[in-house]
Image (spheres, rainbow, N blue to C red):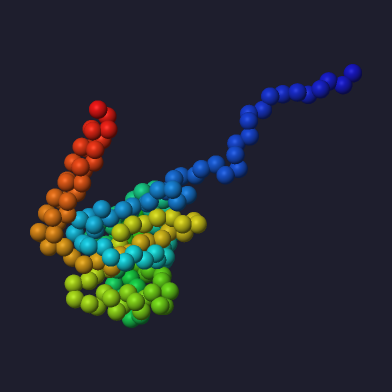
Length: 175
């Protein structure tokens, strides 16, 4: 007599199980929080980056920092300076310099617009965040105008007043 081979298996995992939230694009790899404090951010542009494989793995591991990073148009190309991408532990025999200059990839018409706007007095291109999109690393740069110290104080006052108003509204709703 043939025996039916019945055994319990674990329920199937969904095919599109979430990967690392940074790698899947759900969360930013790094954000330059100081940029919005020190600059008025006007236009934002999404750019691609030319990186080595070990640098991509390092960004995925969360070893990137954009605190002092800025972009510069030179010889018809866009470059990212002062972006720190830490060394990957298993990089092999040829590690990359953490602060090396990296090329940013933009369309020609965007590059022309950035060139004209960044040459105006008081404007600069600041890197605001690194994130993954469709498996590729993207860098968001913003056209920024520097804040003076009184601008920073005014922004802080406005933020505090807004927060206090929201708290007062929430208190009045509770009672």
